[in-house]
Image 1 (cartoon, helix red, strand yellow):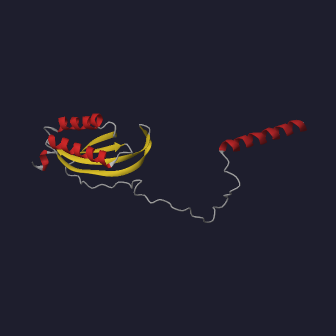
Image 2 (image 1 turned 60 degrees about the vertical axis):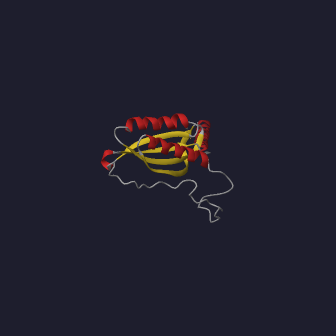
Image 3 (image 1 turned 180 degrees about the horizontal axis):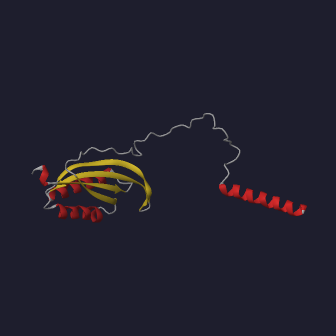
Length: 167
């Protein structure tokens, strides 16, 4: 079919951090079969990697993201998208925590830039022992704002008591 007679979509999946390779392959194969059954084309299914979440989702602080891109004909796109949503919500609800669909322009490039995942970021193996910044000491922790307010109030009280005694 001509490229003009199609609609392009992407779905961003957030899975549990403990998803293993077998479960990931099952999700991908099932998704590819579902797209194919609805006369669509799977363009790509990529594992983005593990990321720390901004807030806990289903009590998980980390998740693994996947990005899938696919195309459907306009005649079947509504029914096909409903079937794909049900696939993630019902069949894989124990593995897929969230999903988000977006319709893409056919003219847009399929290239994108994603941030480095936790699996790709370099780890600090050793602590660098260099000179401490000015004013930093090891003998006490930095004072909190509450302690400063308490000290200011105590010094004001002491000053007022001394002024009252002198009168």
